[in-house]
Image (cartoon, rainbow, N blue to C red):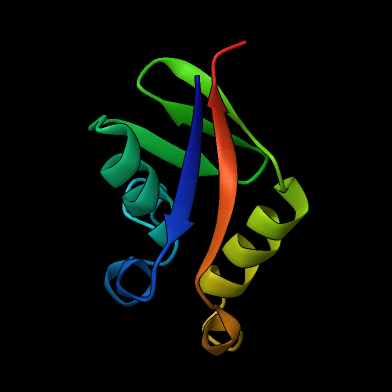
Length: 87
């Protein structure tokens, strides 16, 4: 199943750095998909017990890098990507 995920300014403000379950991307996925268990790790995303695939992996990884770095967090802006859960 495909989902359009929009990481909002509010997700960025309320997200927690270095926390795979409460980062801005996890918050956005949880809001759209409605699953409680979301883990965003460098290299993969898990929603419930299934792996998820993103349309722009480089953009997502760069966002994670910037958000998790106190020096680069100010560069994080809202963005969107497509998420496919499962095969």
